[in-house]
Amino acid sequence: MRGNRYFDLQLVRDEVWGDGAGGADSWGFDNVAWIAPMAVFLLATIGTGFLVKMWSARSAQRRAVSAAGPVLGGDAVRERIRRETEY
Image (cartoon, rainbow, N blue to C red; front, side, top):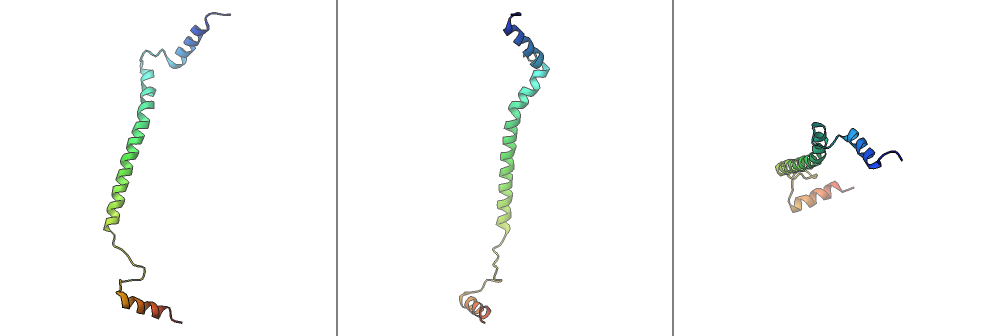
């Protein structure tokens, strides 16, 4: 056996990922990995709230539209239906 296997693995780890002493190279990815999902969730929540607010404001401005045209009262509606459905 050639040397201490644990020590060899530590050397490989230090070469690949750095020594973990808080150098500039270890700061960036760690913080991005923690902050990015939270930022995406926060922005998605704010965006959804904004869309709901816009849609509710837009629907409040609309008036009810009848496919039959202007709103007619009881007997007038029956008479119009009778005329339009005669053979």
